[in-house]
Image (cartoon, rainbow, N blue to C red):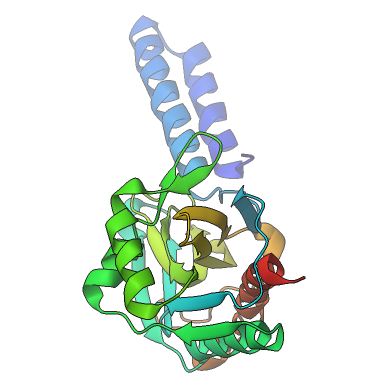
Length: 272
């Protein structure tokens, strides 16, 4: 990346290289190496990842028969996550905010309403922490596609028998890295980055939707939403460590737009 401060540092090193003796030559080489590493490290730290906004991971042919009974699990919470990458690793932080977007209820009402409108029987399945944890292992990541995790076959079979359903839909959040962060970030919210007072802000959403055929215990479709600068750059919050409700709410229509994409993908599986 082009960084004025880095150019100045390199210029000073070159002057020293030509104006001092052999001891300074050795020192200059070391300084040049350090400067190069520092420039690369800082440049990478503020460079955002560029995944696709909505990525189709796995799709297989499926035709829902009349009278298909559908179960819906939804574990998306009302938590807005702010993840920040600063000038150094010591400036990085993550902070969660409770929001009142009713995203959980919105997903339920939209999916259930549309599927009932198509003539299907739909059941909202209440879960516990154990089931929620198991659903986090729903798919296995391969080189090209995701596949259904075979370790969950007993769990899926139990859900089928206990709820008398033919198909299961699962909405949940998942962990993914943002920028060059070491740890994965789950959920949805703000991703901000700053370097010496200059920075950017992007919305992000790590929400997935999986559709499983319980008659054959197979993955019908799986979709994920991810962060992307193509979703639109936002202004940095006025107080980076305490985002106001107004600034948080600017992200709501963007996140709901991505969620609507997920809902559309799910509903289209059952559209005749």
